Image (tube, rainbow, N blue to C red; front, side, top):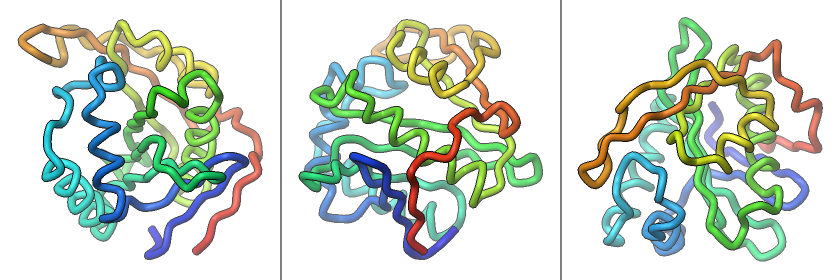
Length: 190
């Protein structure tokens, strides 16, 4: 990984999370509707956002994970976050996570961000497999993954307990050989 990370696409930019993102990140992770299908409750304090940003920086520095801000190119606003994490270098695998602010749902922003991140994962990072697990009820996320070429690989029954309730998750996978993201307009600044 590089000390400076920046991926740009048509309407968004992926960059490392920064201290200045704490308030916007809290707003994102505190929204109960945005967090509805996550494996933990919405955040309630700025300390949680600040700790997540510090952890993201440490993870990036050690090569353990790549946590990105999804920034709206025109406004500069943080509209979401995404990550590659749980790297298994000897097998070329990683997991994918993402979150997008509700005002930007169903407008293609998530697909644009994921295409940029996946292109980086399969290209620059040389990964072979990306996995995502999605709460069974999150049909919007399932549709987004399937549009990107992810395949349903199974159900992990009662995988997460959120607010005292057990939730199944669906496991999706994408192989480099199946990646149909093409060559999106993408510029990596090193």
